[in-house]
Length: 379
Ligand code: SF4
Ligand code: SF4
Image 1 (cartoon, rainbow, N blue to C red):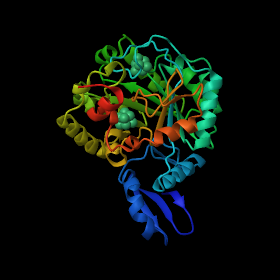
Image 2: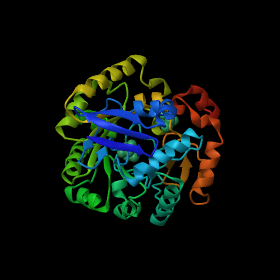
Image 3: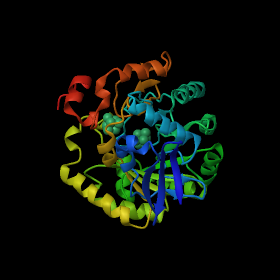
Image 4: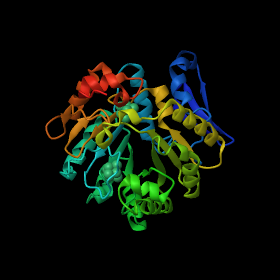
């Protein structure tokens, strides 16, 4: 089975599924010129399991529009623009509300207790603006976005010809009816956070009893409703020894993808810079990722490894809006470059792009120089 990533009279970039894995191919007269520039991007897919193969479309990841689709074409266009030095915020997270029943020890939101939320018309204006700029993935985040009245309307508002939609949730309140209602509104992927494969430990990190059970229910309900479901794990020194258990849980729950991020010292965890993962932890993770690739079960999306190829996405491919309307380079960098209540996102993006720091190879929030210079944090 072959799926075209890009097709023109002089260049074809496509993948062939061989024994369940993607094999990337380039052909046409232009391939000689383009092969070098494409190499890095294609290496992200080569030999990987896709999330789902259908007769007429391929879903490489819950984080990407299907191939082919108008949203995917826009993503390819954005990639070509980036070769020319023009960056587009492909992925925009909108933290629609601060409201959340949990109290996670690593929450990226500072403990403001002001319970701000963005009005629906503000969120719609954000959506209009970012789709105009070329965004292909709009993520509704929180707080707990399921507490937001009118979430389905916002999902419906995102033109599926331009972008896919995602929802990041702890799972609290995601009944079967709610999962079906989100699916009906056009939600593309549901991402449920897990900190541990064990109930007691997960509930401890989330600051409340019962969160693990809600997360498991949410995943089951999402899968039953026909949503693409992704389990999201923020890796830390505390759960890096649970990688196989987390994979077993994801397989048992029949999710489509299991994504890993690495803990970032920000929000409530801001002064924990000395507790980031050690090189030994990261080697453990690399080893797990290679083993998981060979296993029966969901695709693993190892964001820390992917970032070794792509670099840090903050202010380069990602943009974040807080419940106060502040515009940040990424959800973890608490530096407002503007506010949606008074600035045009396009202008703020331009301002961010003018700062060369947002072309970083590694996580800026884990970089002591950046923390000192931009946040006055001395470790
Ligand atoms: S990390 Fe998410 S679920 Fe946890 S307290 Fe913060 S907003 Fe709520
Ligand atoms: S600074 Fe970069 S790597 Fe770090 S959390 Fe933000 S986007 Fe991710």
